[in-house]
Amino acid sequence: MLLPKPPVLITGGAGYIGGHAMLALLDSGREAVVLDNLSTGRRRGVPDGVSFYQGEIENGDLIGQIIKEHKCQEVMHFAGSIVVPESVALPLNYYENNVVGSTKLLRACLDNGIKRFLFSSTAAVYDGNMDVTGGTPLTEDARLAPASPYGRSKLMTEWMLQDIAAATNLRVAVLRYFNVAGADGEGRTGQYAKDATHLIKRACQAALGLLPHIDVFGDDYPTPDGTCLRDYIHVSDLAQAHLAALDYMADNQKNLTLNCGYSHGYSVTEVLNATDRIAGNMFDAAPIVRRPAPRRAGDPASLIADTRKIRSILGWQPQFNHLDDMIATALVWEQQLLAGYHV
Image 1 (cartoon, rainbow, N blue to C red):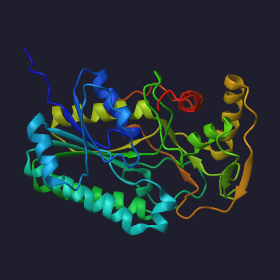
Image 2 (tube, helix red, strand yellow; image 1 turned 90 degrees about the horizontal axis):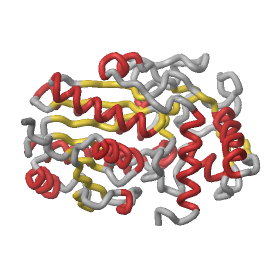
Image 3 (cartoon, rainbow, N blue to C red; image 1 turned 135 degrees about the vertical axis):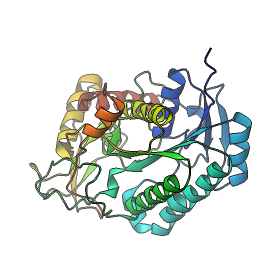
């Protein structure tokens, strides 16, 4: 008889991506323990029966207490700051939160016998100037040259993890997200933050009348319609990738660095057009007002994932690989928030 696996410690598990990973873990029959400072996450996003701790990843004593009490062997690390323009304006905050915080978390993990560590990274670690034609997928060994403090802080943590994995028995998986979108299909969780910068969320807010317009940051990029191209991935598919990565590390005792996307992109204009169509059909919404704006610092013309590696190594098969799925689930979530269902 197989013994049940110990709970997975999820930092940032009350937030957007961490919350979906937590639900995927619970749906698979595993247990989770959540640590979140609730700066962007919501306590109500953590189901009853899941052990929750409000605190900071820098608190080594608290981390040690959680690991010992719940006999955790694995950590999914989502906690951190993620807004590119904000990182340009407040770089030190990003190095403190993303690098110093991760350092202290890792020290506590090593001191308390954690065996596997999964890190939430980003496509912002790549050199966004490599692709001047627009749409060429980036492999995991593409040039790393982040254009923002956010991307640099994530890459610094990746380097730290590589060195730790080489020096210890800790196995490490680094998942580089492209643009995450959508919400849980059962309406259990989604993106709470009202001031989020994610395009699909903001487009849905605008379609429902919560924003007066959408700023289109640049229309002169070297892309087919002049607006930025991004590889959008549904958050529920991303959550399943995390579970597959944990299983792979446990079964093979190997480290991983993997892109998470769909290997094709949509432009800002395409996303707004699709949101107009879907919101019009679902809610009889008026078209989104679009306002031209200057390019944002740190925004590359195109970010598209080459996902052959994650598909071959993990056998990962996305279930929501369509822009309409991402927009429709995000719209339903925003409508629920508007109606007060998740207050």
